[in-house]
Length: 208
Ligand SMILES: O=C(O)CCC(=O)C(=O)O
Ligand SMILES: [Fe+2]
Image (cartoon, rainbow, N blue to C red; front, side, top):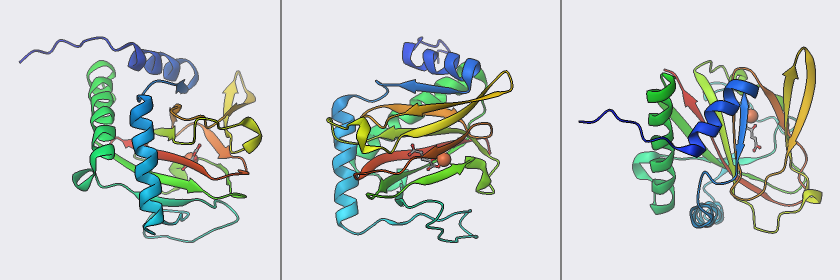
């Protein structure tokens, strides 16, 4: 067995960004084909009525709060994943393995869901660990919108970064294939109202 780590430039960029600014944006975590397959899989499952209104709080404290978030979600089960999601989890597992080996992050678990924001919906400013879950270490969001997504469609993710005691909001448009990774315990963020349906896959890497 070899313990050699082959350096991965995309993962290295994420690790550097996270240590310098607590978030990272990468455009090429997945290939355009993988993004398209995930998008098609999401839409297929949504048409089959498998999504449910997202809740606030953890699973024992499910209060549907439309005034806070308006998205519909479907939790993914790795063991029962179809083709597109299998490839997705392979890449995620490879990334987790890399993180654990190079940074000793101690990621043991993960959870991911598809999300669909219908026109007019949003997700108010929050911290992902408010869901009574302090095991969440890193939040990951990959956007599955169509190629021609325009800034005027809204739906930008705004991350509230703190630079030397000053809050600096950072707007990130949900362009297809774009992946945003950030420290779940540190960065508050929100999804601005969308003017057209917005698709993504979102999840958390957890320490225990
Ligand atoms: O879709 C996004 O850009 C962020 C979603 C989010 O903040 C969440 O699901 O907790
Ligand atoms: Fe969030």
